[in-house]
Length: 317
Image 1 (tube, rainbow, N blue to C red):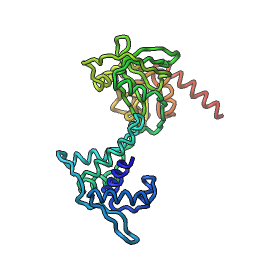
Image 2: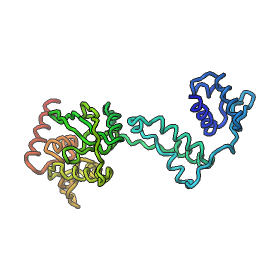
Image 3: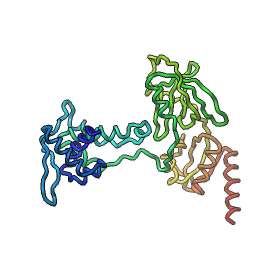
């Protein structure tokens, strides 16, 4: 629409300063003649825009033509402007709206705020993704979102570990943890959490429901995370390890140091009690540490590691 294009021109001139006709035409995917007609329309509407001639010329908007935001502190504006564009907004279909909102906020900010915001964005970047990033498929996210806005029930087919189940659910919220989406819903009188990528099929019902007045999404999520961690299986082992490896274990997410001796053994190692989730995870992790760690107990773990190490040795003989 032409109104959107005129607004985009103003935003680019306010945020970027002088711009050439060719640059504006390329950015807006229109002809240079269209840009010139748009400039004439803006000027006729009383907007102080003018052209500078010459090889370094271009279209310029007077600096004092700007709407200042009121009621917000300098630091508050910067905190909004430097926030990274979260890729999850693209999953929700609002990525372009975010970009437009950012440009409008930047355009209506004082020069000092814009300069500080751009300086920070140039020198600080926050990447929330893990090293081994992956992209889950969630083709039904928009359907879930639409039903969530209007409190409409959903019929879903959900893939568990070994089977598929059918459920009629009342969607109460969507939660994103890193790049993974979860649906929080009421089903059969209980609150449940469904991983969106495991939803095989979803059909929106014509039936609506009343959202529980007591439900708080963030509170539910925090409480469910605590329950999840508490219900994880626990497998303890006593080991002796090098001091270097001890420092690594202190940073590991899936291994917890329950106890450690303050003094080293005769061989320079440290005795410690560790907690894993399962026997398999304990064996895999200890094998990855090579000769820097030795299992003292339990015997089943010691034997598992020994047998695996012998098989590896035979493979490389």
